[in-house]
Image 1: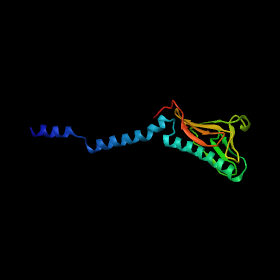
Image 2: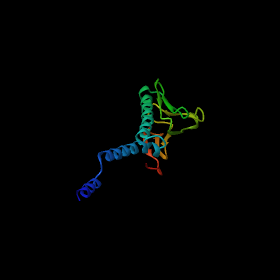
Image 3: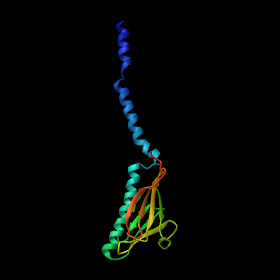
Image 4: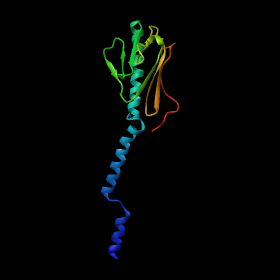
Amino acid sequence: MQAQMQMMVRQRGFTLIEMVVVIVLIGLAYALLPKLAFGGVSGPELKSNVRAVATGLRMTRDTAINSKREATLTLDLDAHVFRVQNDARVHKLNEKIDVKLYTSQADLVSEKIGSIRFFPDGSSNGGRVTVGAGGRDFAVDVDWLTGRVTISELAGNARG
């Protein structure tokens, strides 16, 4: 009788080892899921790249206004980099994200290299840079009249 009661007590709960294994599996799933859902780029990493592009555009606008001269942000789609005029730094984007540039024909150097131009009054030639991965896309828009830079998530995006 005592053996049966001891057997019943053992079957009711989980051992510490079983609980640790489950916690480890949950942790692995949590770490790997964003990579699978967003094509190898986590959500925060994707948003960080979007904000980097927006910050570069805002920096370029400020440069144009403060220097009272035109300033450009040049984006190389193949190399996944952008440069702000009069800034020696090269800003690198994640290689796994998709980047597209929509700008005026006059500011396209080639099929994969182009610029968005800002004028001394803060206005711009306008344009859009889309940044996405795994079906989730963000647009960084530049208003041609005001030069205002905005970020928006494009409709129809998959949520991981």
